Each structure stands twice: as structure tokens, then as C-alpha cells.
Length: 77
Image (cartoon, rainbow, N blue to C red; front, top):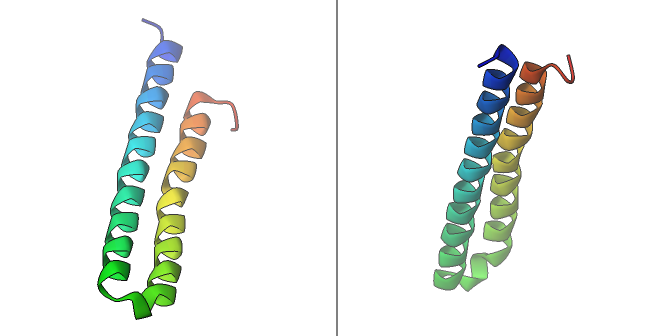
């Protein structure tokens, strides 16, 4: 097995892990925010804003991971 093939497999695993963890994180953020909105409808605006900020912060992680993975594979460096 060549080094290029090992790096390609490692990049695929890294990207898969980042995507799955972001999906689970987004699901947790949204479910918690919706639960809070159901309990306190008057706090909708604050909870919705916090939910969007939290999702944005969670979505940055896979983007950074993919950039690092492409740098590993040598396409960007």
C-alpha cells in the first residue's frame, strides 16, 4: 500500500468523522433550543439567536477539518 493511498484513506476518515460529529452536534443544539422554546415561548428570540450562533460555531469545525485534510493530501499546500 503506497503512502498516497494511506493518506487518502486517512483524509476520508477525517472528513467522515468531522461531518458526523457536526451533524450530531447540530441535532443536539436544535433539539435543546426547541425544547427551551416549547417551555418558554417568550424567550423565543434569545433562544433562536443562541441556536444559530451555536450551529455556526459547530459548522466551522468540519470546514477547518476539511481544509487540514486537503493540506494533508497536498492539494492546497
